[in-house]
Length: 229
Image 1 (cartoon, helix red, strand yellow):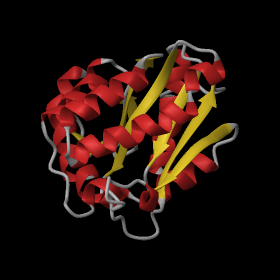
Image 2: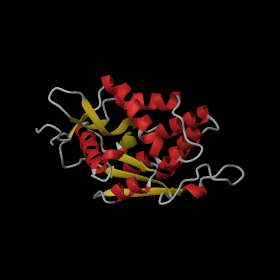
Image 3: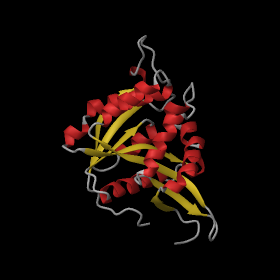
Image 4: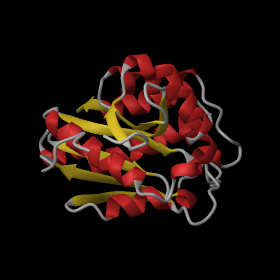
């Protein structure tokens, strides 16, 4: 494979510190919900969730080598983890533990989405391949890397024997990608303006063109093998 060519692989536990820094620099700064005021500063729970995705061996990385034998330059990543049929309850518990914080509201929003989607019952499975967050270096955006990461992630989920792949799109751009994946089903959506506190005030004030969160699911297997170039 040519030097500087884009490559994909599973994220390894030894990558954890680099991945956490990559997401702090790119995802938390630019993701519509997390970057809206007040900006979310990654806390212990955020870092633990990233670590769980990495340690499960279910997340994928896009990188390149800029020189022979040199370090890998991370261009993007897609973090995922397996979730059993009780994961909605776990999300609600985690949101309660986080309390009245931005990340607590974010976890509760995802829990409400998946409570409505009822994916395990809908597809008669005991486990899902749950995507957590995708991020691409700003210098590499607009080059279809997020879609390629999604393809590799779905292929990996198939290889690992999962029957259902889920994605929660919190931005206009990720939603556009998932809506164009063949056979990926749009299950439930929630507008940010409708996700409100006890006084009717939205938890998240998100700029255009981002409207809300949409939950998708894709039944596997996927016909392509992961990491084939």
